[in-house]
Length: 268
Length: 241
Image 1 (cartoon, rainbow over the protein chains, first blue to last red):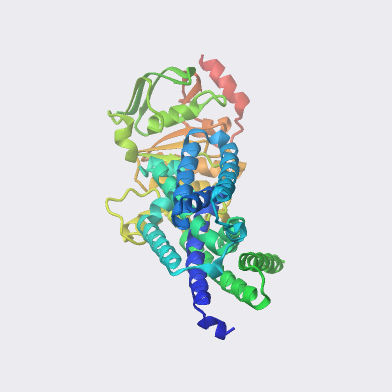
Image 2 (image 1 turned 90 degrees about the vertical axis):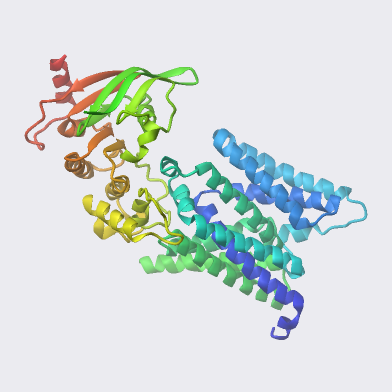
């Protein structure tokens, strides 16, 4: 294992794993407390349309997926405030259409045989330097926004009606949370793939929620657990030669399972 | 002096009338109870007073001005819905949401805000719960915290939307005792289904079912523990009319 650390792609994978884990810990906490898990799932799958678009027109994948998922986040925000009762229908629609669009566009791309699996289940061992800059930049933006607007975001998440009475722009912050979720989902796709993104955004967060009595501690703990699971998953993946994304998620799920058992025993 | 004055107020959702020709004056230090059937327009009236809904026809003045001008003078306690009890937030953080500060520090909370929140918690007898997670409290305790949050802004009027709908009878009694205490300095407006409870504490009762019927309630019971339920209430109303 030690000699593996000298490979650049392993180093990149480890750095990417930690950066994305911290970002998804913070954003996953917001997604969970705002009950937006299904929305995030919708955004993740819609992002595949953006990947297809990027491949077809030949611009960077991150850029294509980001633009596409941010637009889908804005649409979801619009639906939330205007057609709340039809929300699940619309998200289901976007979910499916985004995927279909991605598949078709990639099929139509001449001479380019992209590995669909790497987007469905992640390709953390193929992280480039540019990817790292993008992830680092996103994490910086997320931390900056969280420290600057923490109280507003807390108020909107806990009790949006009261927040609006206090003059906080609820629509703005709700949309902001969705847009940040969209951007985080895109980088998390690189690590665990779009099918498993939801697990990364919820499993460590669920454990952290049980152990925290403030939102900020929940975010920090989520990032920490997520990093541990990701690094351990990568180790397992390298040692036993299995898919990294799936290894990370199974390690997370196993940890959650153990956590729940310990929690139960402690209560007895 | 009247702190709220409503004149010929009508309101409709999608051409469906919810309120018709409401006229109401709330005096300083009134304890006004609003009763009436579900869907009768009670909550809509509150939303109009709080400036959440825009006035379509008629007038509302709070402290002689448009409702939106005096939002900070009105404390609002929403209906206890028991949602979000898993939310990782401490009692004192919830209370501090009510604070309307001039300046907020970049990180954390200002000393002034913490003091204010502690004061509000002490007022509702929940000071020792300041560091507890909100989900660990009972329904009645949580409702006290919501009252403290509203008090944090030092309101002149406290508006409560069915504050005791999910609370057991003892808890209801305690909440109303607390409101009675607060009523010494603050005007109270409460929407409630707990008619027998309202009766022991309110100084004025209005019934809203699209239209408003007002009941001045001067014959307050001397003994709060004396039996008095909806039946006696109904009889009293019949005598009055």
